[in-house]
Amino acid sequence: AQKITQTQPGMFVQEKEAVTLDCTYDTSDPSYGLFWYKQPSSGEMIFLIYQGSYDQQNATEGRYSLNFQKARKSANLVISASQLGDSAMYFCAMREGYNAGNMLTFGGGTRLMVKP
Amino acid sequence: GAVVSQHPSWVICKSGTSVKIECRSLDFQATTMFWYRQFPKQSLMLMATSNEGSKATYEQGVEKDKFLINHASLTLSTLTVTSAHPEDSSFYICSARDQTTNYGYTFGSGTRLTVV
Image (cartoon, rainbow over all chains, first blue to last red; front, top):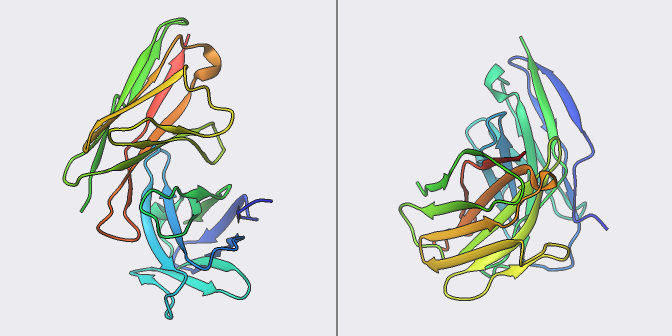
């Protein structure tokens, strides 16, 4: 079974509008972390936001917020006031456990295209 | 913030030759580094976990004799693609674990390998 599922291969959003990118996860470990990364066409992976499984509040970082619904096992990324520079691939990832050596598992990604 | 330098950014090599890719953590020590491979329009797939001073742990299906990983210091891990073939052409990207935070997974800028 897929551990991280991103069901939207591609999405369009109008500039200045908000957009939600979906991510669901599957784990039996009570301790886990959820990440969102942005990958522009250059290929670099840019860290956006992190949510720990025990965090009570939804994470926010500037225009990015993470809608964490633990019971539904979803961790959707919300980008407010979209900008043209937001056009990129977005990956949701999960780390199971808090061992320092634990890897990240990535979802299939969502390509976001911002329209002027 | 944490910075990871990956070189080269791109490389073209002939079939049968070997290519070495370096991944350096510039301002933190990384006991653990990860090597990923990404095919066009696909997600990141973990190839191996590299631990300083010990043998790398390879994911199922990854040939350890073909993809040699060395993590000789706390700031440097290398991936050598031996006897490269056109099917090895891909985007390779490393990630270094910064253990000072729960979300410390910093990525290099990636290496685009083309084997001709």
